[in-house]
Image 1 (spheres, rainbow, N blue to C red):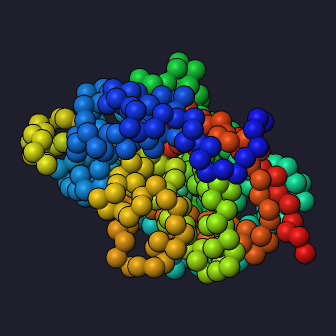
Image 2 (cartoon, helix red, strand yellow):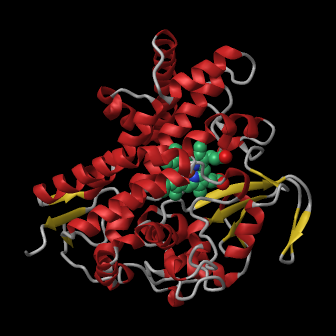
Length: 425
Ligand code: HEM
C-alpha cells in the first residue's frame, strides 16, 4: 500500500497526457503491462489517428465506436476463423472451443441450450439470493474495515452465483476459482504470454475437463436442479450436444461467469471512490443502480479487446480489407468515443437514466457473440450498488493507482486496498 488519496486526478498524473503521446507510444501504451492502470489517454490518441491504425500481429486497431459497432454486427467478420495464436489450440491439450469461437449453425445450437437460464426474466427468481450474498459481502467488508476489495468484495458474489447456477458444490469454489485465473490470463494473444502463462491455461483446461467429467457422471446418477444436470440430460437424449461441447460450455460459463464480473465490481468501487460526487448521487437515489451499471461498464468496463477476421474482401471507412485480414477491436476505447458520448471521460451515473437514446456501450460486445451473461452481470452489479448505496460506507482508497493484472482482453485490478467505515450516525 502506498499513497492515500481520493483525488480522481491522481491516476492521470501517472500516465502521459494524450497530447504528449506519439502514435507509436500510444500503440505500445495500449498493450503494455505498465500502462494497464490507465490506457485511456493512449486510446484517445488511437481514436484521433483514424478509424484503423496498423497494430501488433498484423492486426488493424479499431478504436472508434462506429467501426467497432459495424464490424461486430457484420457477418463478413468471424471470431471462429482467426489464426491459432488468437485462439485455444484445437488438438485437445488446450481450452475446449466453446460457442464463443463458433459460427452458426453450431453457435446457434449450443448458445440456445443455455440461453434460457440467463434471460433477465429467468434470473429474477435469483434476485433474492443475489441480494442475500451482496448484503453478506458488504456487511463483512464494513466489519473488517480495511480490505482488499478484489478479494473480499468482488470475488464472492459472482463466483457464488455462477457456481450455484452451474451446480459446483460449495467446497469446490476455491479450486475452480484457481483453475479459472490461468485461463483468464490466457485469453490474451498467445504471443504475449510467457511459457508459464500458456502452461497455466493448458493446466486450467485439463483440470476443468477432469472436474466436469466427474461432476457430469455424478449428476447423471443423482440429478439436481442445475445447469450440469440440464446439459447432461440433453447430451443423453441424442445428437444435440457432444460430451466435449458440454465440457466446453460449462467451462466458458464458469470462467466468463465470474472473472469478468469480479473486475467490473472492483473497477466500480474504484470509480466511486475516485468520484465521490457520483457515489453521493447513487446514495440519494439508489433506484439509479441499474442505469449506473451501464455507465460503469461504459466508463471502465473490464472487457477491453476482441478480435475478428475478414471472411471476404470489403471496404470500410475508406480502408480495403482482404479476406484473412484481422482487426483488434478496442471496446473500451470505443466506449469513450466523443463522436458518440458527450464528455466521454466523465463518469456520470445518471447518463443512461436521463435518456433512452444514448447509444449502448460495447462492453458486452454486440451482434452474434453479445454476452450471454449480461443480464446476470446487471442483476449482480445492481444489487451490489443498491447495498453500497443503502449502507453508505465511507470508502477510502489506500493505493491509487492500484496494481493491475497484465491482462489485455479482460483488464482487471490485482489488488484494491480500501478502508470501509460505517457512516457517522
Ligand atoms: C462484467 C462482466 C462481463 C463482461 C464485461 C463480459 C463481456 C463479454 C463480451 C465483450 C463478449 C463478446 C466477446 C466478443 O464478441 O468477442 C462476451 C461474450 C460472452 N460472455 Fe460475457 N461478459 C461478462 C460476464 C459474463 C458472465 C457473467 C457470463 C456467464 C454467465 C458470460 C458469458 C459469456 C459467453 C458464454 C460469451 C460468448 C457469447 C457468444 O459467443 O454467443 N459473460 N462477454
